[in-house]
Image 1 (cartoon, rainbow, N blue to C red):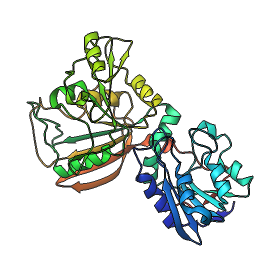
Image 2 (cartoon, one colour):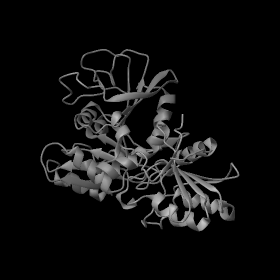
Image 3 (cartoon, rainbow, N blue to C red):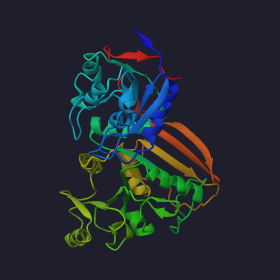
Image 4 (cartoon, one colour):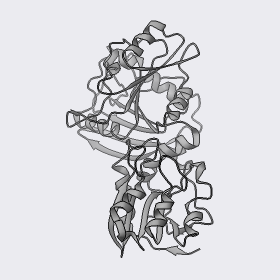
Length: 388
């Protein structure tokens, strides 16, 4: 198989372009594209909000006639089917691109034979750059998981003391982490489609669950999701104020009808599952997926976090550890639920980052399932040497 050389700067620029639109493209993936001519970057683009151009079309539009005979670098295999927009392969052919370098294969079943089959028929080389880069995998994993398993990617964030407490025994939790750590949390919120919490957090903290960057409310706000099986959250809670962001509540038949009606009157979307007891989290995730939600951030107490862990729904973790002790056996830790009985194969995550952040330690971990989401190159696709 022929091994092509590729432009490392273009590869890195395409990843940076994709990073700039994370959280703004669902149900589409966040993708970056770069046009290279004579080994120099001449244009670039990223996926636009739903209904807008894909990254390839944005970059080709910027390049104009200079795209003729140039190379195109893109983080995800160009689409071959007509969704909200025409196939990107059509635009690539029309622009006269000579070679397409892509990093990850598109898992969408509508791709059929893939981009190589379409582009090769028009004399355009289609070349895959194999990569284990966690940055690009994290950009695409939410979309890949929704396509493959019909549920969003779930990132769990929490802050705790050195002795593993998320609040005092009296329930005080504001603030365990530093201002720098909380600013990082808002940056994380800025990359997701939805923020999920439980009724316990609504009752104890009355959070807004909005993005606030530089102390200002961001124009784009993720969907707020409240899991409240029995309708215990006060309808006057700040999370139900629809002026700044939209809210969806999942409850069961145990939630009083008048409570559901009052939330509906406030503009809250209420999804009442036809069961008693606890909300079925798998069903809730499936319903969010059906709405095109790719990425959910979990900011909740030990109960909901433990339920998500028990359901094997946690894909990524951001843990902020503060250099202090809280103590008391009644003070809660970050995770409750049923837990595990044995320590066989319990190390389901791997650390991918650690840093000091304003006096706190920030740990970043990924579930090993991320490695199962990405497909190897097809025999019909030419590859480059792996990115080191």
